[in-house]
Length: 102
Image 1: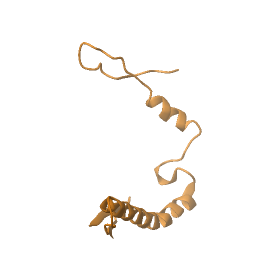
Image 2: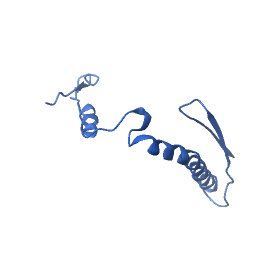
Image 3: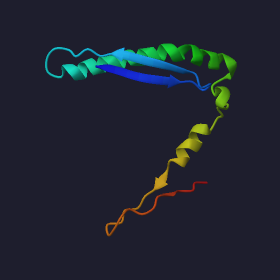
Image 4: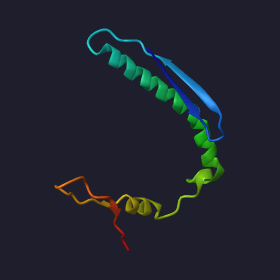
């Protein structure tokens, strides 16, 4: 068995990744082999991304090239995800509406 993936950077550059997964003996051996393959794939991705993450840290703070992080950003994201959903037993669920908080 083999896992294949392709990592694409912001600049469009691609890195093909390939990991062989050997089935282990016994019940569930294929799943354990797949799990080990996924762990190896994760290690490869980490090795590829580590230098890029370091470059972004050195280039300018927490937000990097996508924008600077500001105090209160987490609260804004939290507010956007608060949705009021009311159940309607007679039919399909009602349309989701966002709750406005001041």
